[in-house]
Image (spheres, rainbow, N blue to C red):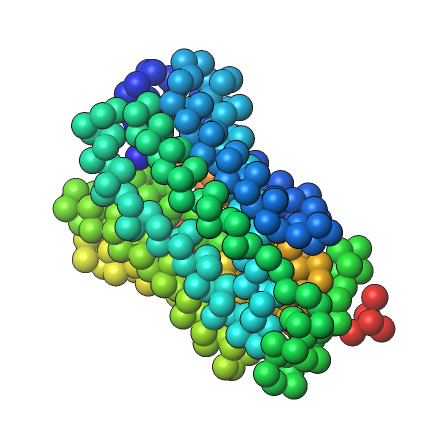
Length: 373
């Protein structure tokens, strides 16, 4: 919705506007290994408070811009703050709840996926009545008022307390802490990174280009309006559900199940999306399955590589989202320009999801041992 508002406000080209959100996403992604290292070393509270100020002030300043460069700086700075808060919030769940990591991280990242379902209509209303600058100003002030006080409660448990929180033997057995360099020497991490990249690409394609996909398949506006609510809601719920299930049957088995079903939901979409009800159905199913990696991988990183360096280790792993952004953004856009349809890029990521299901099999994706590195 901000992209349309920016074009209406400034009459900038689409590639200029698109770069705004690329800067935001990359800032939020690539800051996490560095902010994670600081939080793991010195604690999360001061880092989180600083990030809250950055996120809020970034939007307040973005409301004043009149050039693309200033927008990239201010809006991108806000993105850095958002990324830091995301990484630290996820790490808190990993560290505090070692025997329920899937469900705990699912609840945390649920807000990042479903928040738009709650606030989209309100933001859209303010955009229509007050305009883009006022909307960003109010959102920035709201962030400062709410986030900064909440961040005063952030803290990580002492290492011995985190270990004692585990109520089962399996969780205690995964208490071995791998430093980032040690993690990068285990083959399991590369399986995780590859699978994370391709499975996340699916929700990113729909999240970023839903309007254009809907236009290709001639989806009526009333069905599209339904998806504006259902897609982020399903994306958020999938994180809680997948995390909950993974605590009970294991991360790898959950990944195999979710990624296989995710791939077939995209196959179904490609062949039946001309029917409006099926368009909505398959996109909603994809959202219900496609948000799962955001809960499964922080929990898996905590399980496999320990809690001590979890913020840094997951921050490194989370950079897979940047590659997913290239697949869902640039590569899919290039294929659509060459072939005139979203069918090929969607089939590509569906095959990638099937491959991720195969690579996530418990015999391949299993906890590393020190002998492996």
